[in-house]
Structures are given as C-alpha cells and as structure tokens.
Length: 286
Image (cartoon, rainbow, N blue to C red; front, side):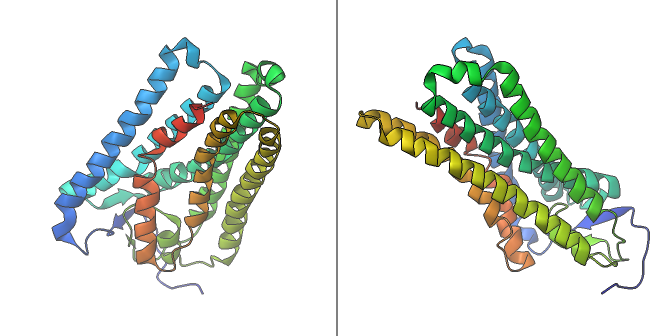
C-alpha cells in the first residue's frame, strides 16, 4: 500500500549499528581485520597467478577473476562500515547509495563464474586430450565476459527497478549499507511488481547456475568412476569443494526479519569473502 509524505530523497541515514554504540570499537577492529585479510589474500592470489607462468591456465585464469570479484565486492561495503564505526558518520548520498547497491548486486557475477569453472573442470576431466583446444584463450575470455555481462545486467535491472521507486519522508535505513530489504521498507509506491521482477531474476541466477554445476559434475562423476586410480578419484573430487559456495547465495534470502538479515548480511558480505582464496585454491589440487 502506498504511503503518504512523498519527498525527493537526496540522502539516506544508515542506522544499522546505532542500537549498540558500546560495540563500535570491537566491531571496527573485527571488520578491519576481516577486510585486510580478504584484500591481502585475494591480491596475493592475483599477483601469484600473474607472475608464475606455470599458472597461466584456464583454471587459474578463472580463479584470478573470482579473486578480483571478491576484493571488489568487500571493498564496496566494508569501508562504509569502517567509516560509520570509527567516525559515527552515517549519512550516505542518494547517488552513493545507488552505486553501492549496484556493485553489491554485481556479486551475482560470481555465481556465473562458478558455473563456468564447473564447465572447465568437466572439459578437463572428461576430454583431457582436447582440453587446450576447447578451453582456448579466446573461449576463456568469452566465458568470463559472458559472466560479467550477465552479472552486470542483473545489477542494472535490480538497481533501476529499486531506485525508480518513490521514497518516503523517513530516509533512515535500518541497516549498515544500502541493501534491498531496508530500501523497500522506505518505499511509498507499490513494490509488488518490483519484488516479482527481482525475485524472478534472483531465482533464475541461482537455478540456472546450480543446474549447470549439477550437470557438469554428474558428467565428472561418471568420468571419475571410470578411473582405476583411487588417488586420481580423490584429487578429482576435491575440485568440487569451491562450487559448494554457490549455495551461500541461496541462504542469502533466508532471514525472516530485518535483524536476522543483518546477521546474515554480515556473514555473507564480510566473513565469506575472507576464506575464499583458500577455498578456491582447493581447485588446484588436480
């Protein structure tokens, strides 16, 4: 139902941490530690892949892009949290909020890249003799470009839909960054159609990529079961670990209240990217 008091909103106030001011310093130190570990881990992996010629393979090429995405994603949100906790500055402009919202949803690109990596492992295990032919540099760049196009297109769609809404006089976002649920709570216009569009795309991203990963690994399992070496089977199955991360995206919308969503979002946006370089590196154990 549409609310009254429509106004032109030029800024938002983030109040996600104001309920517990005594936690600000400990939380600042925790978030800063997570952020530094995440950035250093991902940058280290990117540099290592670039300088080591032996790592110039399709698998490491995709891993480097996953590291770039993780570093960018955490840099969109965590610095804002650190500023809020250290200075008490909670104001964010309309444009900054829209930009943060856009780059946050670009994280869906990672889902598409995980699907691409599943396809890469399928080719490597099922057709090892043709692997370098099928996964040529041109093919790898095309797959990565496709993942970015899909992720950015979805972010543009959701950002356009969300910020086409009218926002009410109250511009206080009960969250620590510009996320979808708290923004929709401020909307004065009808959000039913917007929610349908956003939910449809989110389900499409999860379902389509999960299906690609599932089909790829069904073929991989079939190929692995034909291997005579048990050691070869173990090493091959170890490549499946990182693709389980896609199910983290399914859990993203599982919170039943805004307070629960805050906890889920902290885990999803700050904690998960930290061990990703280590988890992704398990892919290399082939």
